[in-house]
Amino acid sequence: MPGVARLSFSIEAPLLKRLEQLVRDGHYANRSEFIRDMIRDRLVEKEWDRNEEAVGTITLVYHHHARGLTDRLTHVQHEHHNVILASTHIHLDKHTCAETVIVRGRAGQIKGLADALRQLKGVLHASLSLSSTGKHLA
Ligand code: NI
Image 1 (cartoon, rainbow, N blue to C red):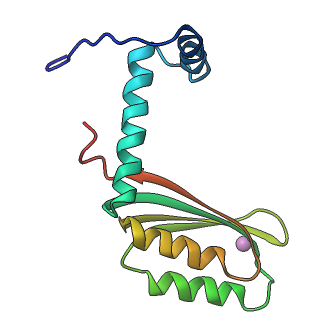
Image 2 (image 1 turned 180 degrees about the vertical axis):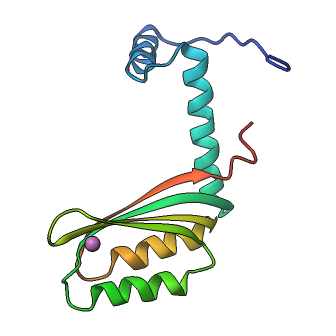
Image 3 (image 1 turned 180 degrees about the horizontal axis):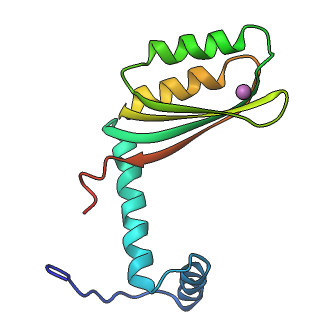
């Protein structure tokens, strides 16, 4: 690998034991892979904290017959059309729907959209998965 540096660092034995467990639990090939992933996770967190351009997925679960809800969900998504790349609707059962909304934009805009959708009456659960454009992770 070009430009790879080798590091050594000190760590207390109990913490090393926990690190090894995390590496095993995560099915990582080795500690280096785990640490690279951990660093990228922190970098993505920083991107979101700094309101940089980000990518994410919002997942919603709701009852489609809740009064006016489907209209309000559509309205909120149209208000944020500039950050929405795609959405997929799944009919989970006779009453319950799941919808995933894939988004790209400023972190603050994405969080604003997730909050607006979460707050709609009749939404049973909403989660936001935060990721990155990947521009600064290589
Ligand atoms: Ni449905």
